[in-house]
Image (cartoon, rainbow, N blue to C red; front, side, top):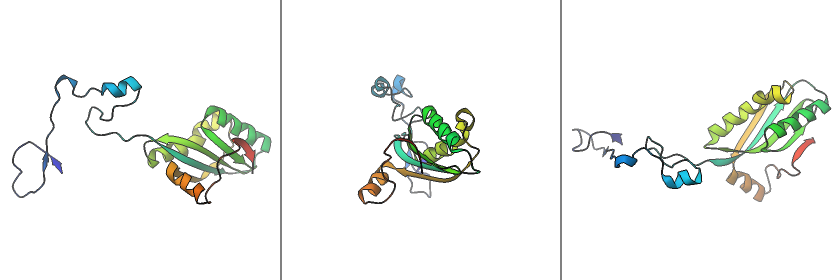
Length: 164
């Protein structure tokens, strides 16, 4: 479909023309029902529908040069404090795995946030200078389907920071 003026279609095209219709003084304002709940309006000022946020299960794997286990544990505990949505972290002296839930519009947004997590918290949590070597992002439905079928990562219990 293409946008255009109302009326007859241009010659040589069978496409339907979309027309914008103003709604008076309320045009472009958020719907009051959504504002009362503190959520975004389903149609922003541009009139395009927003996608609702979804939950994504993130597994981030990092590795690098060996670091003392006590320092790795302390750093991961600090990361869990700084980023309260972390479910569990497993670690060794040269690698770690972090699992958590992220709320995002789509997989691209969830992955982008996950890929920034280690670098953005490296200084504040005093994380080892390791690099990201793996990333898995799956939606909530897929996560639960894997568990029901008996494969995939076990539920993140016990929650916290644990050695491999």
